[in-house]
Image 1: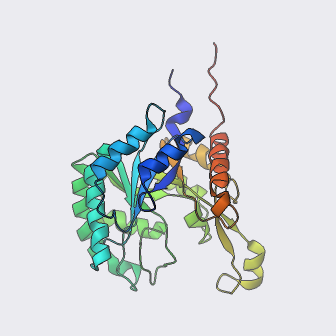
Image 2: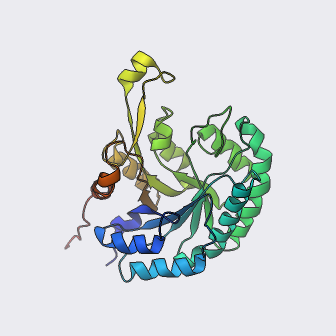
Length: 300
């Protein structure tokens, strides 16, 4: 019988810029990951995505592993050479998602650099209304990661979809059913927002979830505040941060959510470099445990 526990899969991200994504999938596919998110930073570097998708699926072989989402991270709202490459990368990922078996492309909205968040809305609507139609025609969803990339309401370089007030604005500009969020608790916690109530309100717009956590040093905040020289928050690999992932996954299930939680590594201050995959596999098992552990068939 099918495994209903896997209505929420636990996987990881795989860079499409640093080395070959298909080769990397082949290297780690046997570690227990149930899904992968191949992703690109600003540019696909002209790769043949149809061919890459086929090789990624070949690397998975007959394992029960899916690729639901591709990542394309950059600023498609501006018009410098690299920003135009990002915009083209979005189009190419949308057009070729099916070669990976993917039904979603995720990344940043982009932003008019150095301006208040609301100054980006007109350009946002222009670009994303067109991309939403392109994606809908191919049965693809668009998911915006909720990462501020060190920006805020007053200024920033990359993304405007990092705050629930901004979500209200952007979904008003683009009410398309296939535009939603690539959500993770970490990016709310670093701005001292409680992520759990968001699930109850916004889960219908969560098209993909990133597995990333945060540790908040409240004693630093109480003594130094959040604008001092002392670091008050660290991004963490799941299992090493403050989030109760059992609660998060329970809330997702209660909201009727299904999909993949793909671990976003490379941020943990401890489990990094030589310990990167140690941390990621720990997170994989931690999230599987938070999901309820091994599926048990009732013999009755």
